[in-house]
Image (tube, rainbow, N blue to C red):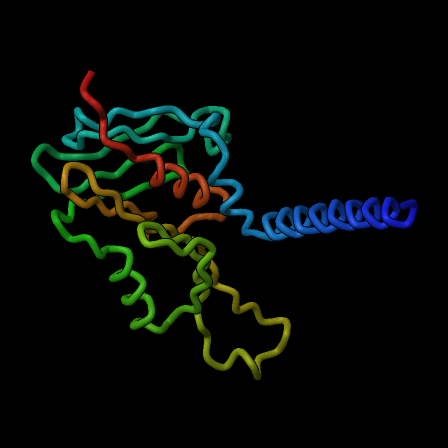
Length: 202
């Protein structure tokens, strides 16, 4: 009877250890996920809502506020002409988000990735790669880099974000400026793009 008791206790300990090991393994995998994903899952406590209905988009977008520390001015500036299909949102000197109305085109991100691949001038490293959003590091491919002296710098690197959101069956392109931004501001832009939602009538 004693042997049976100790055998059962050992089995329970082994089972608890196995469950703990599985739990640790899952947590370990989560901790190895991209820092970008973790950052984007945070609440928007450093953001403020901007109603875009007065600019002909029936939606609300979250933009960095003064606590995000992105520049001297945190008051959003929206550049848009009535009945036009383009919008530019600027928050300070380092946050520029371009929005464009693409009608019923649902493949903007896929087409953008194909275009980047076709150009072939850059090495693209996707930090976020989703159906409706990509965030990537873009590095200029410089020929002759292998044989050049080590003192010569060839790193022409920038960060970009490109996304699409659909509001009332209209697909909007949202992207960073062509020249790109620093890594910090691109993360904030990705969060803003993900936040764009249809404004519900009260």
